[in-house]
Image (cartoon, rainbow, N blue to C red; front, side, top):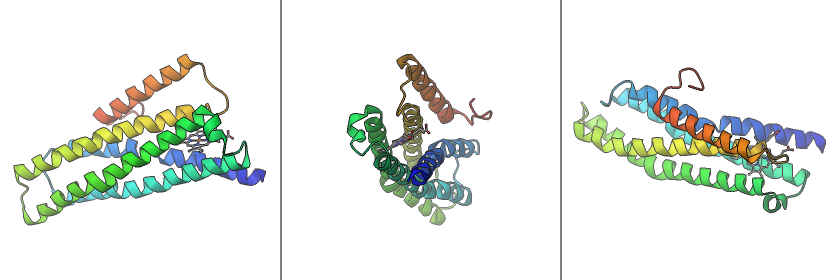
Length: 195
Ligand code: HEM
C-alpha cells in the first residue's frame, strides 16, 4: 500500500506542475502581441490551436490532481479530512473554481474566437472590424488566465502546508508574491523566468 501511496503522491505533484498551462499561455499571448494587432490566419490558427488544445490537457491534469489527492486521502488520513483540514477544503474549492473558469473559457469564449477566426478565411485581408471583434474575447481570456495562474500558485502555497502550517506572515507574503508574479506574466514575456 505504501508504494501506491507514494505513486499517488508523485502523480499529485507532477500533475499540478503540468497545470502551469496558464503561465505558458500568457507567454505565448504576449509573444503574439509583439507581432502586432493585425490578423494573419496561419499565425493566429497556430496560436489558437495551442490554446484550444491546452484546455483539454489542463482538464486531464486537473482531474489527475483531484484523483491522486483523493487516493492519498483514502490511503492515508481518510476522505473525511477534506472537511476537517481547512487547507484541503480550500484546495478542493480552488480546484473546482479552476475547472469552472477553464470550462467558461473553453465552452463560451473559445468558440466565439474560433468563429471570428474562421470568418477570416472568407474575408482576407482581415478588416479592422474583425480585429476589433476579436479583441474583447482575447482580453477577457487573458485576464482569466492571469486569475487561474494566481489560483494555481495559491493552491501550491496551500498544498505545501497540508500537514504543517507556515506562519501567516509567510503565507501572506507568498500570496503577495504570487499576485505580483501573475500580473507580471500578464504584462510581460518574463524573459528571465521570474522577471
Ligand atoms: C489545485 C489543486 C491542488 C494543488 C496545486 C495541490 C498541491 C499540493 C502540494 C504542493 C502538496 C505538497 C506535496 C508535498 O509536500 O509532498 C500537496 C499535498 C497533498 N494534497 Fe494537494 N493539491 C491540490 C488539490 C488537492 C485535492 C483536491 C486534494 C484532495 C481532495 C489534495 C490532497 C492532498 C494531500 C492529502 C496532500 C498531502 C500529501 C502528503 O504529504 O502525504 N490536494 N498538494
